[in-house]
Length: 88
Image (cartoon, rainbow, N blue to C red; front, side):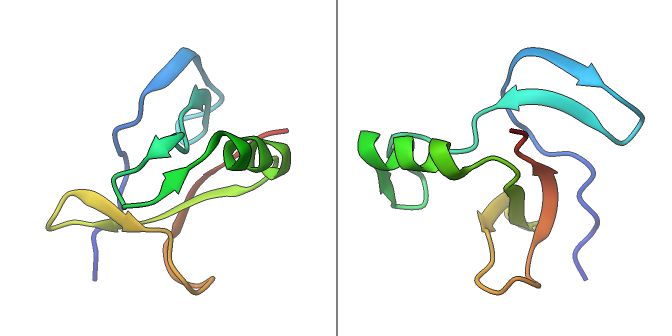
């Protein structure tokens, strides 16, 4: 069984607002326009569509402990872990 991931590196833009020992609010990048590490490519048009529909979406991922990196978001709903939620 994978270890529980308690933190993962992310670039925070602006201030980090701490609400409790387990919940903080920050602005961070959740996708990249252009070429991505996973081989996908996000166009300007698709990025605009993502931004228009992203409110309240979970930030979900599967972390591979041996590679110390995220592998994907999980095909099935029960795969992966929710690390946060995109606010309105």
